[in-house]
Image 1: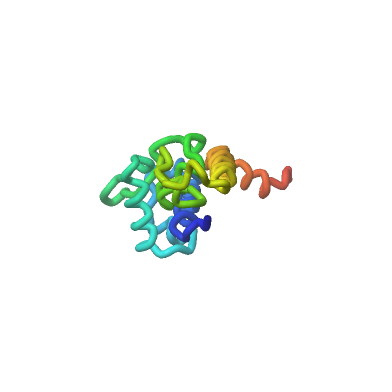
Image 2 (image 1 turned 90 degrees about the vertical axis):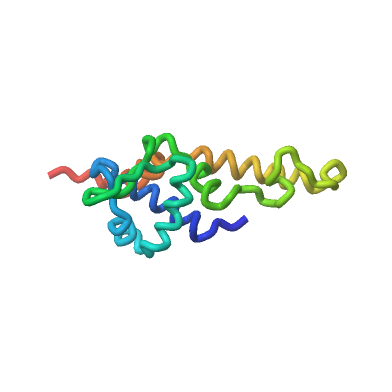
Length: 145
């Protein structure tokens, strides 16, 4: 499994919106500048994230985007499933129930099921808030003047 540029940039964009949520609606131009990503590319990603209602949109002069929920309510897995179309390491696990004609006799299926379980548990165990908290810990040197 390889996460595409769309998935990686979507995560960065969602983190940027989470970090600047106190500013209200954030323009894609600002996100693009801070993340060094093409605004056109972010527009494609926004379209994907808008469909499941992950973002709120405001048009006009003070327009832009913001998270529809709190950063603690978004997991990395949620975001990647939307942008990647799923996280299954092999095609036969993309459908539930598994419709592969070999599934009943496949000796490698438990390996792929285990990997899929670990991927989902790991990515669903990390929220946007977790990442922001870790970032702030990393740069909080505890200086007092």
